[in-house]
Image 1 (tube, rainbow, N blue to C red):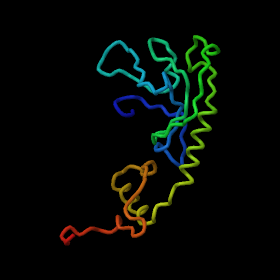
Image 2 (image 1 turned 45 degrees about the vertical axis):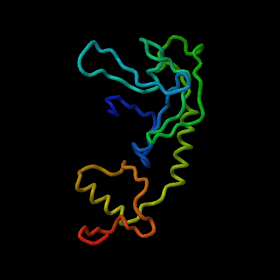
Image 3 (image 1 turned 90 degrees about the vertical axis):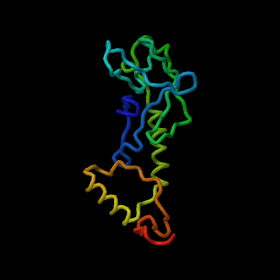
Length: 167
């Protein structure tokens, strides 16, 4: 489950980046991204919802997608938009339609290339510390996004701080 109980269904995922850069075809309605689609299951405290592109087909009072674009879990959105041809799609549900996602996939793949080209290897001491945290937490750190840590020149973030010292 994603934030707020919304089911986040990613279309694309890589071993290199895991959940930190999972990708999907994002929906555009009226030039912006609509909120999640909710499903009426007849009652109860939990109302299932999704942001998967295939749910935005205008059926059952859901918004109808006008275009798709690549989106990434990191927050990146592609500038390119791929309009949906509803004359060709007709009344069928989007999940049954032959929707071409190759443009959005190519955009997301290009985004990953930029991320990969700008990635900096972790200093060995930081990688070792992450392995210790991983062992202690019982969770894998493979999908933990690391953006920036401490002073890259002096590795000050890795030195123990003495709280009794004058600062």
